[in-house]
Image (cartoon, rainbow, N blue to C red; front, side, top):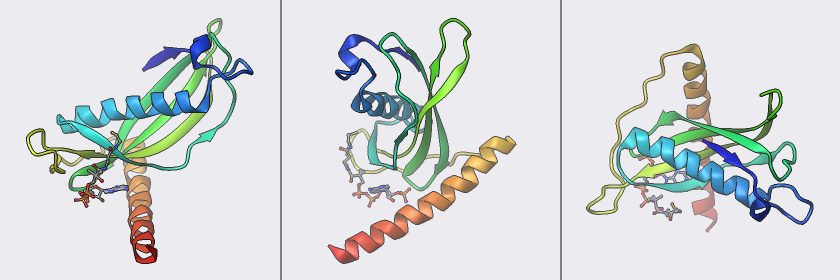
Length: 149
Ligand SMILES: CC(C)(COP(=O)(O)OP(=O)(O)OC[C@H]1O[C@@H](n2cnc3c(N)ncnc32)[C@H](O)[C@@H]1OP(=O)(O)O)[C@@H](O)C(=O)NCCC(=O)NCCS
């Protein structure tokens, strides 16, 4: 996905707002998750987002999302955003995030089983392995939070 930062996307310093970055990350990730599931999908959670550098009004943002791993009805999507220099085409890292989406049955609105993602390249296998580790940590954290509640 590619976006241009307009004045309406900026904070009073003339840089893109963090909330707008999160919005674009969510949209790009939702498109990737929906393409995998071929059903409506909802954002279940977003892991930590770090903003590495500011982007000025007029900046071009390139956003890439990949489905890293799948559970029964959920999937982890990794998103990376770069600022592309218009003159040179050079890209610098702006932000990254991991999001979990859940596939919903269009008739009932309840979680629906999805096809597993099958990693093929070395990069996909690495992302898959790391995503499974993050999924295990998330599940353990949710279990601990539920016990505290
Ligand atoms: C996300 C949601 C559908 C999960 O429903 P639920 O009744 O808890 O469903 P389940 O307990 O059966 O869990 C379904 C899957 O979601 C995962 N999940 C649920 N809550 C999660 C969370 N907070 N973070 C990550 N994964 C989560 C479960 O691990 C499970 O994954 P799996 O099937 O791959 O093992 C429900 O909580 C919801 O609708 N939330 C609101 C979503 C929303 O409005 N998002 C913003 C707008 S898109």
